[in-house]
Length: 525
Ligand SMILES: NC(=O)C1=CN([C@@H]2O[C@H](COP(=O)(O)OP(=O)(O)OC[C@H]3O[C@@H](n4cnc5c(N)ncnc54)[C@H](OP(=O)(O)O)[C@@H]3O)[C@@H](O)[C@H]2O)C=CC1
Ligand SMILES: O=C(O)CCC(=O)C(=O)O
Image 1 (cartoon, rainbow, N blue to C red):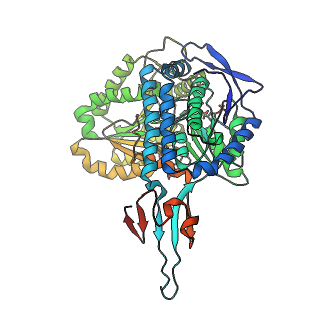
Image 2 (image 1 turned 30 degrees about the vertical axis):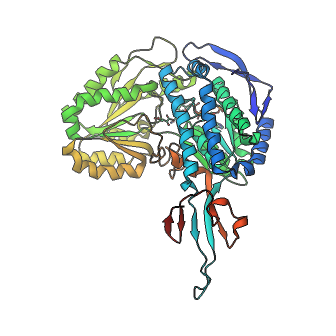
Image 3 (image 1 turned 45 degrees about the horizontal axis):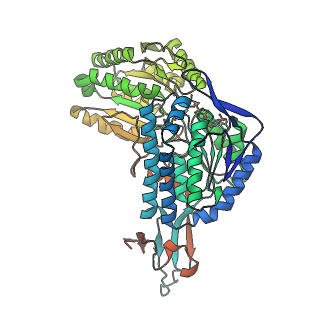
């Protein structure tokens, strides 16, 4: 499939005034072709088409919408190696990682298709009428979840496939029955266009209204701002910086009709290393820590940016092993010159901090825009007295906090901001302490993991990839896994309406055969 640099508004290819080009971060060279910057006129056209498409798309038979999601996955597969080659050039990510990400992207579309067919996402609940109830009769009440309306999706730079144009936000919004308008990430416009064309092909094959999907490439905050401000947009999905996410939350909340913004922003993903684990296998854990920290040049929002442990010789052995591993781990290619610049600034600030010790630096990169890994350490007092030490440095940088005792460990945890993940590394002897710490971590994070590493998120039914602010702007939900569909739904109750005017899932004959809660009891079809 050809990359043309067009703005994809429904079925139309549009061109704009100014253009921009992608940059290969590994060479610093610009890549062809030039991409047209979407304008406010394109935002208006995309949102108008999305609003027009909404009722038809929302009311599609479940199987038709499920087949559409599966067809997007097939169209992405049909892009073949061109997609991988372009994504490698635009992101600097290696082939194996991008092939895995493509599989994950297709897998999550198919998973949402199965969720649609199964039907419990609608949460159909029926309280039958009780005409003879005294002193007052009860009306017939029937509730289900319905789509919110058109959704704006901001693709992430660090997952050009799985968190971008047809990534988790788009898949869950389409599954819910919401048309999607994507603001393409300027770091991977060619990858974005290829995937957008695949989605558009699936829209056409299914005979759906073209406004179900549009793709707006661009490099300006104004473009994203105009999209979120458009009255026809009813929710926003975002993965990126805290500043970007909060800017969109502000725009959304100041609209005449405020709307929800589901922004996944920043997290340092604390790891608590318990005493027996440090004593029994500190060296092995030190190596595993560096493997997780440096994976993908540390450009994961789940990367272990903070380790908390008791000071002493066991922690010293963990740090020494981590330092040795870091010394052997080549610098990782970063996604963009800007992200590399922010990383270097963050690491330099920590290295220059009076209360911070540099435990290890990785080898200096031989190419451009490469992240030289970094491990720092600080006392619990120093960490607690400067909030900057707890901020995310996006890349392979992490800080070890040395606590004097478990009370200090608890104090540090109580002072943490909201997190996507929190990890406990423990052996059997530690379990009593773990039981005290896990509730503190669960209060502050979306996922608590035992004896693993937080990078790599399973796409499944039970997954939560969310967490209290600032990990996300709304800690009640998730951006990965099937629960993500709930972000784009709202409940509607129908009272005393005859079958013929009710949505199919609420009718007496239950044509979709979905499980329903009737008078408080779950019933199979
Ligand atoms: N925790 C995480 O998961 C991630 C964190 N990051 C952090 O973000 C930094 C920059 O990376 P990047 O991916 O570019 O993330 P950004 O948050 O800068 O950008 C993400 C998307 O949001 C848009 N955007 C950003 N700010 C605004 C705004 N004020 N108004 C409207 N739209 C906006 C951008 O569009 P445009 O630039 O075209 O305006 C882009 O499409 C990284 O160094 C890292 O610190 C990045 C990725 C993931
Ligand atoms: O670790 C993962 O698989 C997902 C990470 C993520 O969501 C992110 O880096 O934005």
